[in-house]
Length: 287
Image 1 (cartoon, rainbow, N blue to C red):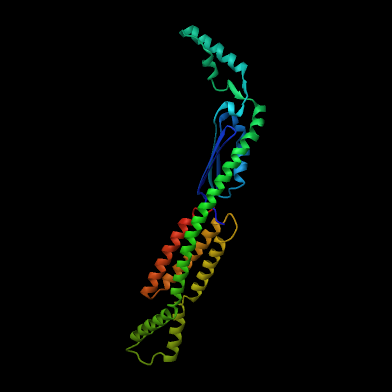
Image 2 (cartoon, rainbow, N blue to C red):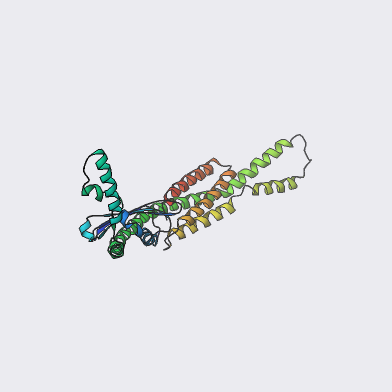
């Protein structure tokens, strides 16, 4: 089942708010934003999210709702506080003013999360992270279903175009053979008998075979069939395989287009390439 790289998940539990936003990206890029006092948990958080992400960019933002909700314990750096207090007292004596408790407490590093308390907070944080991951995964699956439905519809259109191309195979050969023979007849009109008629027919047939698109149509059908099988498989990460198959499909269409001698067939090839490009736009969002 294809999964989109675009998704959103959110959970608000145990005093923490967790948001996960995903967008398409060639590789996996997971970024975590945590309260500074919980920065030591960045790697465990990333590891949890990476268990469900194979490709794409994911931004995880974790904030605290209230201090009381998590029961956090703060450690005071008394040595640092005393040093700042002494310096501030010196400045106040020189420039005038008073040193207040608020002046000290707002200095970075004075109040820090108790290292032991971080270990206690991790189990509380895991629950909302897991809920956000589940919501994130659900949204990606739902978007994947929408992408698949659109792609399958376009594949059916592509198969119909393939069938239409097949109907021109014999006409294309006959047209090329007639044009080539006519061209040779004009070149040799003033030199009758210089080339054996039977030999000329054989050479025309050989050259005409080079305009045959049968092999390209066989490979094109094979690639479309493979694409259909992959998009319907239960595998999670299929985006790169689909992109590769689209390249192969486009290559065959380009070859067929270069051999076209019939205007109607050229139009079908152009329409098919347009359809492939629309499928490619959707595949760019599949993991």
